[in-house]
Image (cartoon, rainbow, N blue to C red; front, side, top):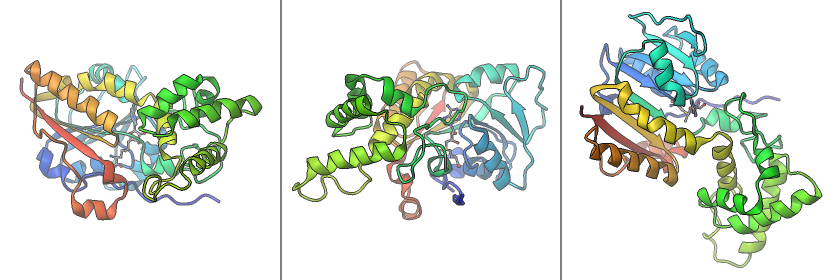
Length: 318
Ligand SMILES: C[S@@+](CC[C@H](N)C(=O)[O-])C[C@H]1O[C@@H](n2cnc3c(N)ncnc32)[C@H](O)[C@@H]1O
């Protein structure tokens, strides 16, 4: 039986309007459409919006939610598409790393504001059959973009033990070594192909390792959370994509245009912070906030996920 997944709660909901200064005619580029919360906030403020997403299911959901605006949906590979000058809402199915190329081909304008809300949406994490969640029993897939060739099960089959340790450590998994060791042993007996197999394996090893330790050391999140996050990030080349995207952002903006980047992991936030410092040194950007903006108390009470959200804002100064 398929279950209905609630709409993704957009991080910093209600605040972006003020941070960006949305007003009629404002040109807004949302590079991570998801369930469309940020795009909708911009559209309802009178902005003209271009939204990107790599996942066609996300695009379908966003258009179902945003009923008051009719998007022009563009296939990024279509050479003949022209963007009307007076567009209100355009959706482009593409990886955001291609944004400069797509933007040139379609002659998109320079924008007043650009938004990047990293990671998967709640819908993607909880959808059946995509292999993101440890609560079901599905094939370990985890691809946001179905055209990608490598699944999480493939990574578990081909990475050597040392590479697995490195991968899990990048998600701050404290038991990276014993988990990698048991995966390497287990796969000699049978391949690890399902979410339940992996989740049970991790739960067992952590239970064994933490028995007798004071509560709190190993408590609040599901034991498999960080390993699943590490695999998801690797399958979708999330770090590589951020690396490729960040230096493109200033060129998409008008002078005094603003960019906002929301991340959910300390490693990603570090990449964003260093990028902003680097472009400040080059005289291209100016950070609006030295420390990331944390979600409001009000938002934290509504959405658990935003607990780890960090928003960095910068202005283009040339
Ligand atoms: C956290 S969700 C965005 C949620 C959205 N702001 C909202 O209010 O509903 C991130 C979205 O970005 C998309 N995404 C992730 N990586 C992407 C990439 N490299 N290129 C394009 N879209 C990507 C995902 O498919 C997902 O739908």
